Image: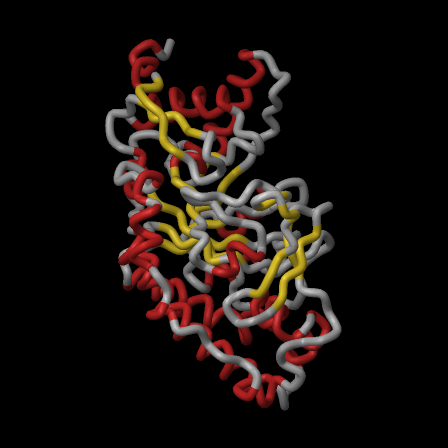
Amino acid sequence: MFEQYADEFKEIGRYRSGWGKDITQPKRNYPITEKENFLLMLRGEKPVWLPAMGNMTDFSPRLIPDHLVRAWVLDANPLPMGGEVIDGVPFQGGYDMFGVYWEFVPITGGSMVRPGAPLIPDITHWEDYVTFPDLASWDWQGSSDSNKEILPDSRLVRTWLMTGLNERIISMMDFGNVMIAYVDEDLKPAVHRFFDKLCDFYDELIGYYRKYYGTDVLMFNDDWGTQHGPQFSLDTAREILVPYLRRLVESCHKHDMWFELHSCGLNDMIAPAFAEAGVDLWFPQENLNDFDKLYRLIGDKVLIGMITNAREDMTDDEIMAVAEDFMEKYGQYGHVILHPGFPPNGRLEEYVYYLSRQAFSV
């Protein structure tokens, strides 16, 4: 049935991955490069096949202190997943680029700031406590040179910025203090001043990402939700965060990049804010969100990474049925991204490739 496309999905090599020194990813005999295909979708054109999340190269350079202390280094010298041991010493966390200490929590495989001693005790005078890093003093060229082998021209380079707007101010003030500042009329002006300055700083950082790594997609890490719902109301998001999120989207576009939001939590109530900010891509958290609902809400404005109910123990026929259902519901016009799950379901990705090649060739 799909014989004419089978040769295209054959593996013709391997990409070096930033997920581990011995981890590689397949390079396939696609008719155009994965980057070219993804860009067709991002530009609103019909792709040759429906892209999957794995068609991008994940990159989180060690040069950025936040990536190291938060146990999320994906580069040519990656941190062992979970950060268990570095040179025989258990990983503890450390100080981010603003001097905030993140403590590694082994049970979660990530790091957090221990509350109770915030860097900013008074948001109205945050300028007295916060020093912005001198990005020009960092060894960008050395970092670029050491990572060239894992940054192929044939795939989109998806580079993390680990601590966004909401997460950044929480790391400096503690969660409760931030939620008060978001709604207190006397404190809001200071929050706006801080986010304004932070956006200027992130704009500079985005420029370095593009210049030295050839970053195509900024993977902006900023959780706005919990397992029960958003941390704040949609109105608060629109007033406090959306103007600055929109500025960062514009910064990416200015640098010929695309903006992907990583925002965990049950976020259907707040999803319209992502669309209003102009977010290009969003992979919602699995197991919490109703993906059909999210697609109905903003699927015409934001490229959503859509999951399926595929499981590794399914038969080939069952996986094909899942792929056919996925294409029927979401894939006909090439405006979603396949999220094959963790670990990725290779058979699902293959079958969606065949089905989408057939659908999009018409």
